[in-house]
Image (cartoon, rainbow, N blue to C red; front, side, top):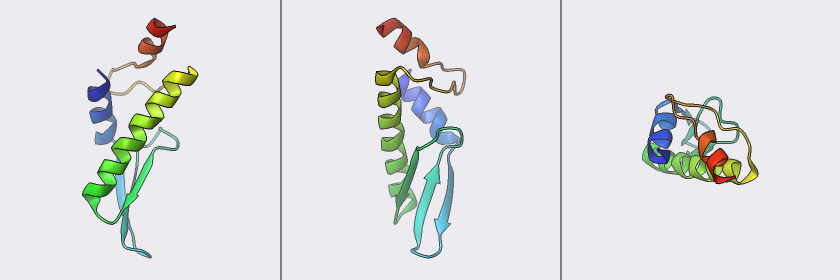
Length: 82
């Protein structure tokens, strides 16, 4: 379920090229603080995936709400854990 959630969230990602330093910037709308920046698009995607994984782990640990994406509700994991 977690891998599917991450895949679904990454499909929502928005990428752009930062002209000043010729790097790629990526973020996932609705997931505050989840972003990546790298010299290649693929590198940016990897950083974004890692940031998302860390963001999910932190929110689960702190008991914070995680938005439902693609019909997947990770908040149920936190409820079962408690």
